[in-house]
Length: 106
Image (cartoon, rainbow, N blue to C red; front, side, top):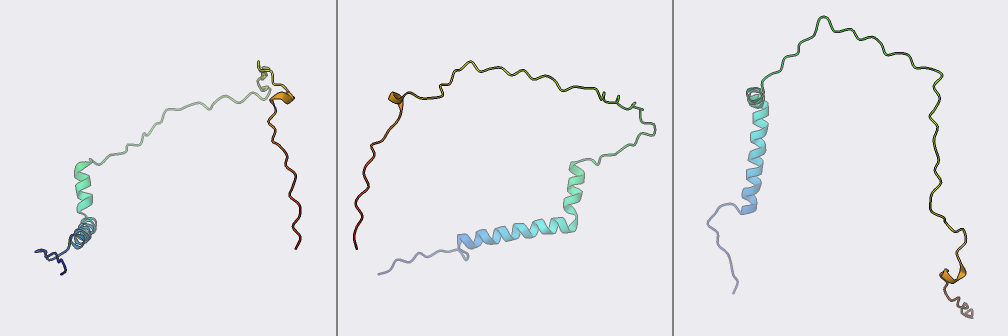
């Protein structure tokens, strides 16, 4: 005996979702093609106007760079930490060295 689920709807939920997404995209394409999107944006955002000044204020050019400028002196500070160049043997990490196994004869 098999169990069958009977649904009263014509479309499955997955098909209905795909149809809804396709309809939404068609609506968006129609809005952009008809110009409705542009008129809606113009009503939301007021168009801005650009004014060009006829007499801009005069700014003198910047002064020339002095060619005799020297780079600033850099002060090197010795670090306050002393680093030992050699590590004592008692603190060294060592591993026991094993002899290699004898070669296997064919």
